[in-house]
Length: 142
Image (tube, rainbow, N blue to C red; front, side, top):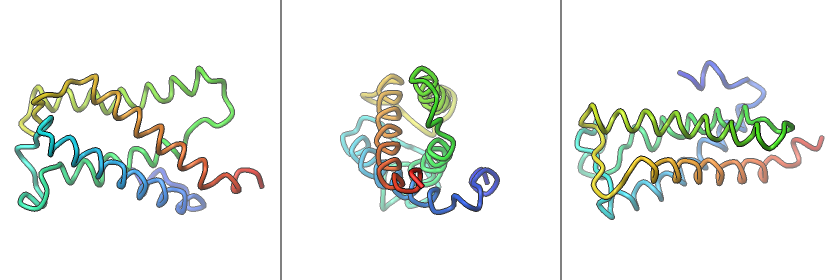
């Protein structure tokens, strides 16, 4: 619902590219983390037998948040504002994940901690931002 509300019609193409690229990244990282038995997802709604990662989070929620991150990224401001933007978005996901680990049975850390989540979220946001900037570099120069 966030995407329908906050993606402007003239930026739908950008949203699609960001969403699909983030799905690619999270598919790789998500499967690696689950297959190495660092995290488990005991309660999953979709594809329980096909995939041990969290389909809902990895393929819908996380890419949607990253799409909004890329669409509203502050291009011109000072580097400090950009770092705060990264910190804010990364912290939100990490805090919600930490609460999910502590108070629900949706995620279980096995050989993982919140700071690894923070680092990987930051890294995947950064990779997504680089790809988005590269893919749409001609769009901004016009």
